[in-house]
Image (cartoon, rainbow, N blue to C red; front, side):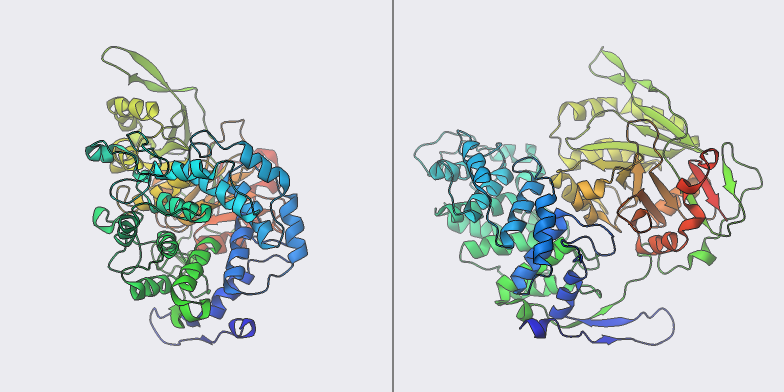
Length: 611
């Protein structure tokens, strides 16, 4: 089977006129070829088209090969690489992925891991009060052939979170326990469902509960209700939403689809429309052989694993599940079609030099490199309404580059996320007015770290978007919920007008620290955010445009012509890029013409253009 799966894939070039692009026939062999292209000769896996490797990508690369029954390359080197990586905090996602990746290589979790997990089980039966952490603890213990100190309490931890509608939520259900492993008496809390985080009624929570109860050897209570709720998350296109399809308008997703299929499998059931689910997952395969999160989205190792695992479960094998299909090669730029950057976006300097703007003349290239540190002040003028009479100053940072302003509000507005706004200088007074008018909303948000994403975006972010500002969200490592919620918001609440920080200006690579930010690639612009420390020289936002003012900068961001460039010692070129493939290809091809770190200190301007 391995030889058949790894056979040469037939590629068909379609010649023609107009906007026709080459097509490729892809199938099971293509998916494995894509996966193997992410394997590193020195061991481990990394993102395709990136020079580095990491635990996250290694975990999913190994999981794909194991699911497909394919051999694992460089096993010894991969095991050594994983052992060298820091374990991280116990029960963090990186901790779990590292341990399970080693387990896939035949190395079970050691005694210290087992004893540590058993010692940290809490009186309510769970770990860290979290469904996800409790699921990871049980998964690791099961991999080591061990059980929790109290399996019954661990099972009860999940049962206490089962709702009368058949889904499990993060927050324990109101009521008291009657008997062990029985569903406690419900209070009439149906009217309060909407006040909980959107994340609570989510397939992830129900998946964790069903899988954990199964691993512990307990029956899932109200099995028909749980099965019906899972099946109700299926959409007409065959894929699954994160909650019942009738309650949301968001698109299906391969992660949600895998969660539902695997949870149903544990219950001895299948989707109501299995053929539709197979068709949806197959529609997520791209011309490179990998799978995206949704049809048309860029391939990732993580989404490729979810697709392969779902098809393997539904069809009884990877080769049977992945249908051969013709995929069209995507355009260089997915936002505004194919572009020849050297022609369409040649930079023509303004007749009147902009204040503080230095041109690196004679380079002949239409590329601008913009840093995030021009002018700093200690606070944002304005008042913050806390109550009817109490008023305090709004602290934060204001910085400018020619004809633009950036405001970064202090602290975490929502747990795990910071937000700043990029606006034109002419909008500065408008921004301050919005701040004053909406400070009660900001105060409420700051006081509620669990404010739902939809509420946060609608009340605190959308008013600025409506006035032409570009919000930049900095998602902290581990905020898995925030990344998926932001994905749902793109194209709805925000209409795509939002940027995400892929790095800090001091060179901190947020994508490596939080790999699921990859999910947002090609959906939103990736930019550099403030680090909160003295000005760094290690990351810049590169953008392509035909004018150098803030309007040109925002237009480039919103149309996929921007790149986040981060200095990286493990890259052959000394830098890694995040952003649209077309813009990355252009920037990488002309590295020496804009590389700021090779210039004398007095020429390392934070906003430089080459022409």
